[in-house]
Length: 270
Image (spheres, rainbow, N blue to C red):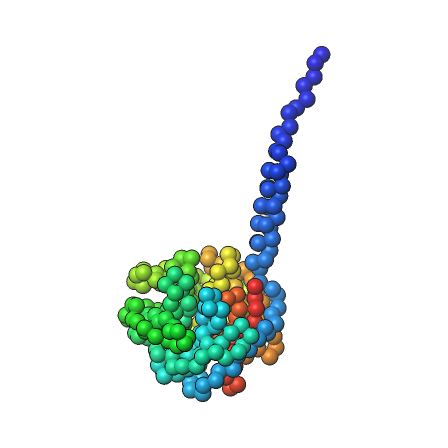
């Protein structure tokens, strides 16, 4: 009686190697996306000019390899540029009463939202890295509140704001701010009353897209696009914690501002 050996599906060695590499990279990337349980300060930057109190945003310009920071409250308040080690580069006037501010790679310009009905504004830097060509993009209050600090979600082309009216976030289309989406956040492991009331950060990391500052417990709290709380990172005991403004997230780093010392402290997350 003749017996038959079952055929086995055999992939060529090269295909097995490619499949293994793909699975390994996927697992490695997924693991690398999770924020650490605790954070350490990477560097700090002391504002050189003296006007204003409520530092509101830090924006990373990857093309130039530097950060740009502004203080809210007046168009004459400071706008300053510094490098990744905290070395001062340029000091100038803000040119707008900023709240949120980010660098848009597509247009090679800085874009942000102002206070209340002052709208969304953009500008570029001249040859001396000073602000120029300040232009109004969208007029009116395209944000939940007067003091709302926006964060730009480049992948979805929308500006994200913390919105207490929906116990979560509101996302405004960059093309048409009248198109607004709302996202309720899961507060089962934290409290909305404990987070910085003006500011949300966008990380760009899948599953941890949005970050809020719990100033009461000294944590960064991360949420995904469905509103689930997906991570938490403990800040150092000496980190400056504020209930409004003085918090920003850019270039995989959280920035916290010491209002008395006039110093931005950077904490590397990824």
